[in-house]
Amino acid sequence: MPRTTRPTVAVTAGVAALLLAGCGGGSDGSGSGFAGAQPGSAAAEAAPTPTPTPTPMPTGPYVALGDSYTAGMKIAPQVGEPSGCFRSGVDYPALVAKALDLPPSQFRDVSCSGARTGDLRAPQKTDGGPNPAQLDALTPATRLVTVGIGGNDAGFMQVVTECAKDNLMDAVKGLVSDDRADAPCRQHYSAGGGDQLQARVDATGEQVSQILQEIRRRSPQARVYVVGYPALFPADPASCAPVLGRTVAPADLGFLVEKEQQLNGMLRKRAEAAGAVFVDTAGPSAGHDMCAGEDARWIEPPFPARGLAPVHPNAKGQEAAAAAVLKAVRG
Image (tube, rainbow, N blue to C red; front, side, top):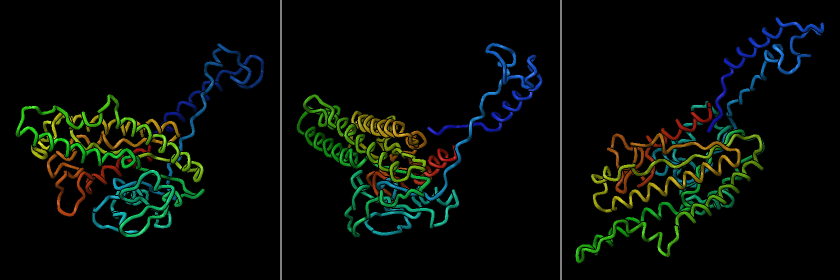
């Protein structure tokens, strides 16, 4: 999390300590109440503590890296090349750059829908042509980097799709039998006694760490912010009934919530280990998941509003992500 400093309080305390020290002249004639003070003396106790130097707020050049949750898939206006990246002109990087009053020359958004960690190192194929390796946008002059990546490596969207399919098949089976599973998707991913998704998340974590190391190598002066994923589902699965009906069992919705928490937990851990700042978007988005009402939701449901991407942030979701990033950047 961002380090918070209180320069006004710290400076006031430092000045007060200096005044106290100055009033306690040493008996050895040194002229300083603390320069020659012995441990435990009143003068030593009055010695000021060093005033912490506030970390300057990073500005530009700013480079945004990431996948569709960063790019603002299908949110109008769609801008930039290649068109297959589905990059929005009001995705959270663009909103952050605007709030920081960065000129176009100080901002590069190279995020691309469908990106995995490997696509940060090498060109990514899209229907609109290749997106250059995202890391190539970094330079030694870069001072601010946001990166939202890992969901595609862990296959989270495929997991959501698989859960829907498993539940549909289980529902069909229930038409001819009473043998219904409580959580067919959880059973699918725990077949053989292991946790297949945890293994994927762990493997993705290694890739994320390597990406963060490479960002540091290319832009050693940059402040790096790893942006997590927003809450897709509510903590209470029952509230999804009006939107999802019985397409996914409540126990499997809980399973999906659990797995997204594991993904975000991994991103936080890897960010902190690399000296980066983790930006939590799941907390602020609680109550604004895909099962919230149309006016309240920041994530679109499987059948989204016209023109938007299913199971992805809408414009409100991008605005909320921008607010979370700006809060972290400004400390």
